[in-house]
Image (cartoon, rainbow, N blue to C red):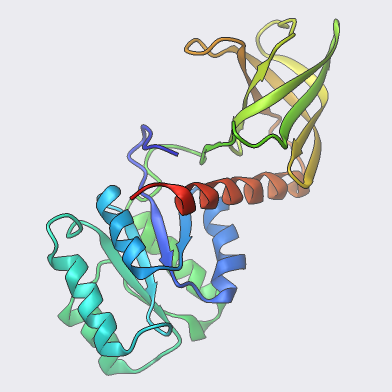
Length: 253
């Protein structure tokens, strides 16, 4: 998941609460935001150095005392390598003095999210902050690389028979796949009942054949039909989320 065109920003959630780790993360991914969870504060700082101008929301209810969190946050803001990072707070703490410190005194650009407002309202506030920060960039969907996942495959039928392929990357828009044996149909041909296996998830859907990827041999582009079911879309989003998380957990910093 190297940096790609579109000026999209990486979004890190440091020590996210359990409700955010599941429901809110799904919503952010579905909204097109490249979101990761991090459970190590020092690794989080290294990730901010590796990916400048990223956004990070910090759960200050966990791991450290308030003074330690303040010191940690100031260290990010004052370090030349991370000072362009945009920070925000997530907390159940409604202490007005605490909120004033982060919002007014420290001027954190991504705000102070009061989780006691509930998942829906908290998510709405974060989505608003991410929209204001133009965190999605110009792209319409998140592309996750999955070439190394042997359990990401595609099986389709053409006039010449069945073709089994390996999915190289996937987004809510479509896939790139490598086929050893594949008779190309005409561009924009609809392929019916294409089967995608994404680890434990199995999808049967219609896809549109777009053509060959020019930069790689035997790699072909297929787009999902716009009317794909919500259930299939959710399987794809959650697979993308899994691939993103695996990437950030293993990237060298």
